[in-house]
Image (cartoon, rainbow, N blue to C red; front, side):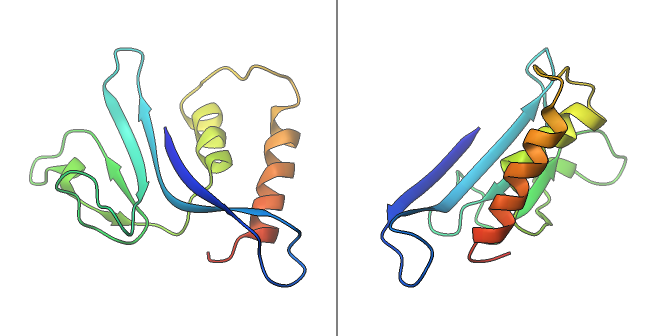
Length: 118
């Protein structure tokens, strides 16, 4: 996982300080370290030969006619909470706490309330 942010003093009523995301890469791998999926948003830097500027996902797997991981499948902005939820619900990762859903939901709601773009 890679999540770069800056801390700023915002205008208005957003509080004395805010942390703003400037790029992220959420890389999901199996227990053999094989990549399953990677959610990216890197508008200013690009990563390697990946020049897509909007939020997107790379899906790794086999397909007869496409090289899936080379595609930049568009997404909206993806929170780390959404990725963790996916890991637990869809990929059977065992949560470390019983109240994981309430914790993720609370933080996801806060993320939605203060984000500056969707």
